[in-house]
Image (tube, rainbow, N blue to C red; front, top):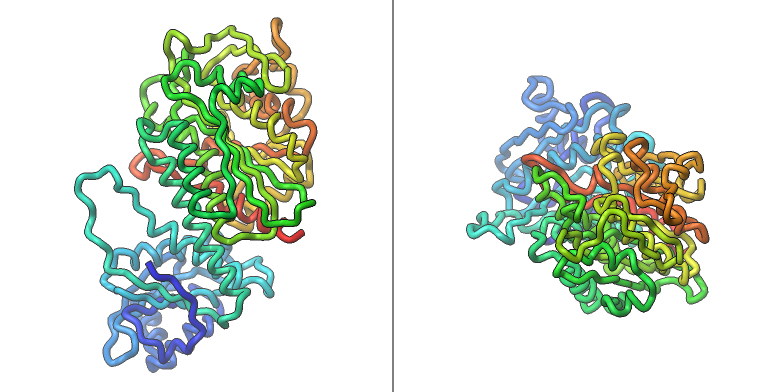
Length: 497
């Protein structure tokens, strides 16, 4: 697909399909005014007759004759006061639903001058162009690699987005949005790949491939012997029941100054989670291929970074293992010594994510990080608490937590902070080891985060529990690509600082 920006006059630009925004109530965008004038007041007439409406996310197609455009697509953008970034994105998604499988080969989109409530007036067009770019890519996503019959190729080949100018700032914003969409789609590809293919070694190969395609990324992969030498016994314990060996993946991007502390991303990479000896129920277990959603989001984010090359240093690590039951698997009651030297009594082998993450959190201390963000589909309790709308955030630093939450708001990839109080730590007490790997049913997401916090005391750290947001179930089953937008926004907010 060919995407580009244009600042040429809309009224003289030929295209198969012109897309404009129509408010339900409020000031019309300049582009819509100009098109209505060029059409002799046709849009006003159609609105008055009820043939088109400004209700948010509605789509009306109007065929045209003897005009530079074969058809006009009128997208309802709602009331000015209600046009939040989330509602604006709903309108963009509705637009892409009509365009992507429609009859047009090329489309001109004039929606960047639609004002969005709450945005800074200086940067609003940049923010909208970035969101448009991201939506273009992520709404064109398909995953049919394993279907014997492929769908027919789309007619749509070229999309041009109207902007007020053609300067570097607007182009960079649009390109960042496109790159973020592609990063989300890479994350979705990884998550949707079946677990008989997506295992730890394969995941490591994808990281190596990313480094091969982008010379700004350096990738190193540690095998079992190297992990054993480092004392990563909890990662090894999780992988003991599988014929697929665990891997520890390290990616480095050095776009900032040599003295700049890196920002670190840590991803949980459980490529399939049966629960181990603490076996999960069979119903819905196929969705446990998404238990590597944290690692997939790390890889997707690193792809965005590699494409856009911001001035920042980043280290990304992935702890990858497959949690399976066999005669050599870790048992409930086993005690393992972590890389940090702390001992863990494994009371439930289905609480394996925190076990692979704790060694990763110990490992990254060597980088003297500016911040550490870990992403993990960690607890079902998180879904009970927040549903599928927001990721949970836990942090040992209030400023960092606020930065993560703000990034989520700006990106429309929302998160909500939950407490990390010392009051919960006693639930992890063990009679036989320094710490137990579960704390009982009450506050399951919080005690999981409390477990991780014991390995992240030496730096600013935030944990994102994405169990409710990394994938969809039911008819829409599939990876969502979250929290790539949040992570990209967070990292970009620190670039060049």
